[in-house]
Image 1 (tube, rainbow, N blue to C red):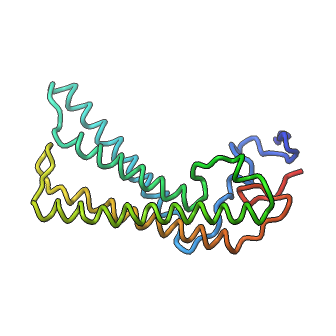
Image 2: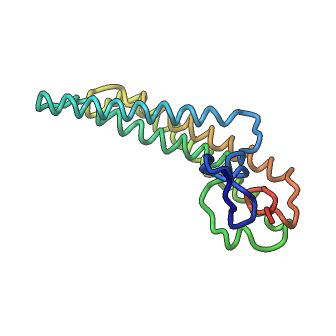
Image 3: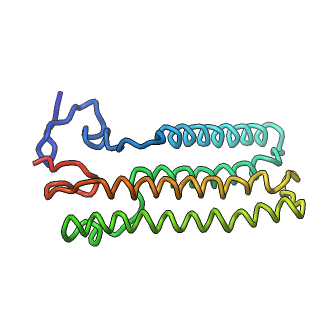
Length: 193
């Protein structure tokens, strides 16, 4: 059974999203499935850790000391991995009034400029966080909860920051190659009407 959409095309009742949104991912050199699977794994680990802690706390009136530390680390990693996926899919925050107005050449330049700024920001974050990792390692810092070496957690910030910067560079290159037509919206899909 199909139902009409406001813009005109018919949707399959079993499909929660219009076909153009389901297939919105542009082809990339490095598969987007990496971020998708990392997100699933991190969310699953968070759910299992939290559930185990709740069970232990319910039955023993105490809790695992390590769960809060791991949960905070996993939530930070989740935000970074999701940020990488958002950059690669060009779903980062922007003011659409400015990014979708004006000529097609202006839109293209703004898209490239936005991707360049993201690349610069995360390159700086990655470069500056290397010093933090080195300090954690050099001074033998340990975590307050369970006493693990702090660099085991902090090493992931520069790695994922440089990955986000590379995703932004890839987006900038794709936006430079993209030809905008007058009936394309910001996501690159043709107008449905």
